[in-house]
Length: 251
Image (cartoon, rainbow, N blue to C red):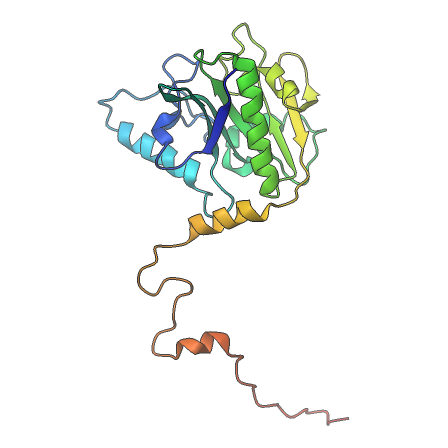
């Protein structure tokens, strides 16, 4: 299998997300996990809300980028002719995905604290030489990224069906290959969990801080300057307040 390259989702590569196995679905407009009543189907191109749904999905994937990082990762296969995305993973804190929270509530024996991050979608196209191997590599890359962010555990809730790539979390056995353990559930609805070290990576957090930096124009960086005051005041200790007399005496 050719070597894969992995990139976090951003504004430049959002449209590279490949078409998922679910017929009619389109990841760039899906709100299945973000809403209990959400759906995977893409709106018709001429639908009044088509642009709004795509814009909202973009905002959700990039919402935490300046604080905790992007919520998506792509796997690219390159050769002498082309570079094409053959895999996609969506992930994020449990609080970002109400449907994942509702699924997790069915398993009261799962650890409550700290709340895990969840992998909601794992899709690998049929163009991949080995879909399972590519999926496992992509999951490993995601876990390495989240480990560097200080995340301590990751969970996923795949389904076992005739076409294992049809549900958005992808093939259940791929999680086992990627080092996940079955933490709850049965063969039909397993819960896979992988413990991480939770040790932050200085380079990853440096990148997050860089992404959260506002445009270097005006006075908004590195700190907003107080109006009509000396900017050096930001680096001075506040003046000492006069000491109030003690009504009970100094003793």
